[in-house]
Length: 119
Image (cartoon, rainbow, N blue to C red; front, top):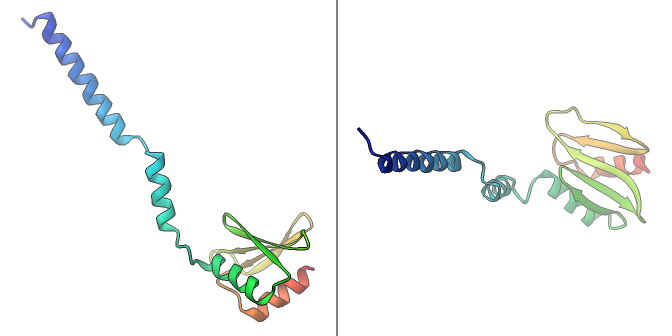
């Protein structure tokens, strides 16, 4: 028959084993954040579009907000630009601000026409 001390040792071993199992299965938030940042390239299509607006349209100010660009002029919101290859290239409105979707980095002429239309 097993003595009481051995039951305690077995119970502790099971608890430690379950704790290690749970620890290995739990998401590590710090590690997940770093891996997500590594997957997203710094020089993506939105970044290229923002640089193009800064270079060719100096009177507009561009702010990146997650998955879209917010274009302002004299602190007035002009347009929101998104780049999503899954959606058709189009324009829609979010309140009174036009949302312009591109499938890839737009040309300078296309960007100029859409920004003029948005104002």
